[in-house]
Length: 298
Image (cartoon, rainbow, N blue to C red; front, side, top):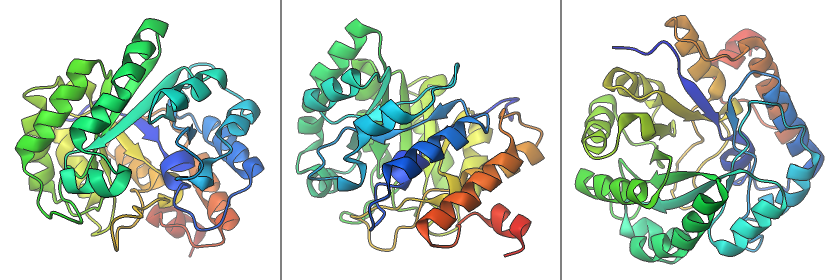
């Protein structure tokens, strides 16, 4: 049964921009987040407090949080890798964080130079501190449908890692098809397996659109019972460790599909399309949103 409402988690300002080759001015990031806030989104992931050495594109996280206009009722989470990142985030006024690991050992080693167990141990104290301070924690599990290094990822590994994050106190767990190789039947089966150990209300899906399967995968997961979907305005993003992986599914396309199905999102699609087109101009490249291209006659 399809839902009446879906919460879209907008990841463009963080996951979308972190892989851009040229440094995006802080003022552009602030304007992007403020524009997204005006679109009616409930959750906008604003930046990352990972070491600037590893993610130079987001080295201005403090300045971004100092500059944005926070709209009441909108969540502005930030990614944090360890206690140092957590303390930076809290000093910047962050009240909602995200931690990350992978279902693939090979990917974790290439991505953050740590095993899955080591990555979880790194952020265990972060989660404990967040819990005592009333900070909401989201957990990202990447490579849930495939890994650029090991290939297929056993569903049992996805279940194990997701269950562990939930047990540690993650309020929500986002299941990411990092390289976009998933198809609807596989996506549904993966979600079904994870929901056997983690409540469906605590799960979200995060699809990249490498093989043009993201919307179909989202639809299959909606039928399975998921109610939270990650997406990125203008389809920005990608994975620097996965050759050929394109960006996240475009928020405009997801919103158009959901609204066309009679599912409420609270989002002003026209404003979102305008924001996506504006961002594409700032980045100097075409938008990846098919809806925006259709509306703009491109």
